Image 1 (cartoon, rainbow, N blue to C red):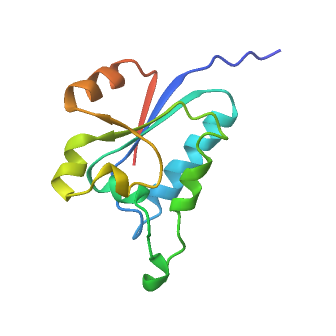
Image 2 (image 1 turned 180 degrees about the horizontal axis):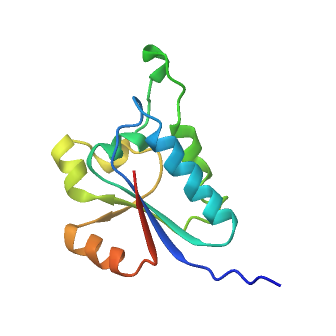
Length: 123
């Protein structure tokens, strides 16, 4: 019998939601690992914070909206959604503009979170 050991996995989302397949592929991988009982968390920073904004209109550029997929994070047992505070501040985005509830983290807190992970994946 094969025993799976649950690992702590952090997925870092740095890219804007449209223009590449990185965001969707990262989310698919996170959900797949979470489905196999790994302890998955998501971090949004840099332009990745745009992935979880309300009122996206990707049809205007011929793309399919991916933000609805983030609403399923609790169903998959994703432990935490983190957003780097500085990334929001630099872009003038308020937490009330985000699609999901998140935990805002400073750079110092971010380093502590990363140190606790078994694996870190970055788009």
